[in-house]
Image 1: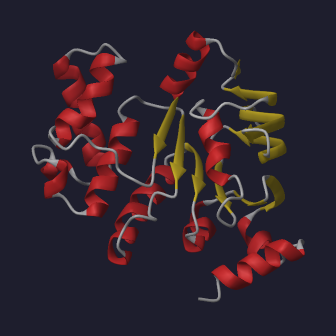
Image 2 (image 1 turned 180 degrees about the vertical axis):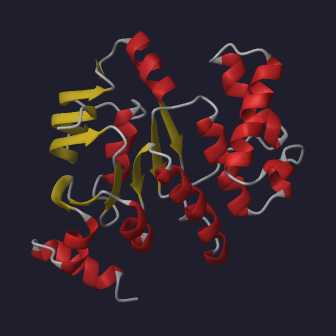
Length: 247
């Protein structure tokens, strides 16, 4: 079996005393694997991936990323965050900085790269997401789809081993969704380990090695795309797919 780069073992998380948001999560992600996580609102999808780089803290169980166990060890958390890139629903770009400046910030401050090297890396990643001609513009001069591609390039500038996407197209107009998904499909084809929370089922069919369906903090079903869509086992999965694929 391929070595796991992410491993959840009986991971539990609560918000406060009452909301049990992740329940006994067991999940292994192989290097280079591409996983799509779907499910209704409030099912724990975003919390699951936010635990991987310790944006959320789990209370029980074991979570390892690239062989390092996530705990309260600040150095371990910093080491993992250098390996894990994340793209959010909102672009979170600094509006007063150019696209190029947004991309060089982390490599210079976190990676301690000289400016020239950071700028060279930034331009490489902007070319990778097909937006290098926008390098000297400010975020608000770009469309939503362009801003999200900048956000993807920014995450890639720290040369992560893992990319996490938290509903990256949900804030976009429909005509802008395709340009972002096309970039993500290209990344997937280059062997990047990816976990993507999304309702874009066409993307799941095209890219995922495995689709995971979550509900009420649990992994209800997981399977390769053809099996997940053509022959779901759980009644809850069937109900969800009938609603999401029926509109």
